[in-house]
Image (cartoon, rainbow, N blue to C red; front, side, top):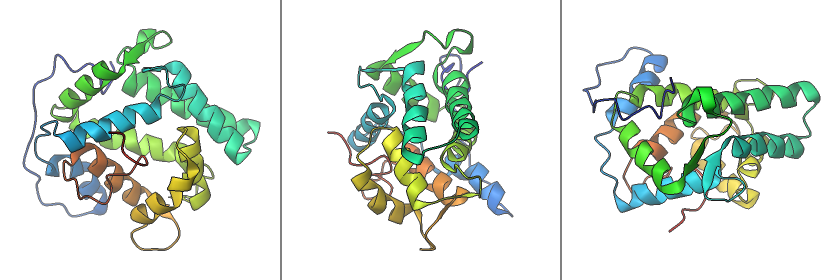
Length: 217
């Protein structure tokens, strides 16, 4: 069963965050620190932008083809070898099949329209699926950390933007907001903190509002 989109059968689920003792525990609990998402104008702008960025061929639907194109574009940008390209394609196909399509058994033919995608997302962020976003975005990090050194470089981040058909000129500024300790790299913790804030926060002044580049009105 898909972790994110089999949501019509799930009940709303928000809970208090308990004290944590390790960074890993803090990250796992992070989705629950945010209140219920109301679907405010700023949140809808972010989700409209998120959907548009994922829809690489710009046909108004999310499909397997979009995730294949993401992998191909990153491969082109980074000039990956065959082994690296296959690993990246497998990563994107795993995310599409099990976390986005909503129907792993028929994921090859699933097409999710814009309006339906946002509706599903609003249900998902307020359901028992909150925890799964941590897992999904951690897998996503692995698909951006192309040399497997545990960090995202500026070049790898630019490749991520290129893969999503986001103008790479926006990458340096967004990268700075992720690299909170200014060491020139983005750790898994920094990436997850920013991505989760982008998805769950409705604060228009959050520094992670432009996680996927400029917002679409």
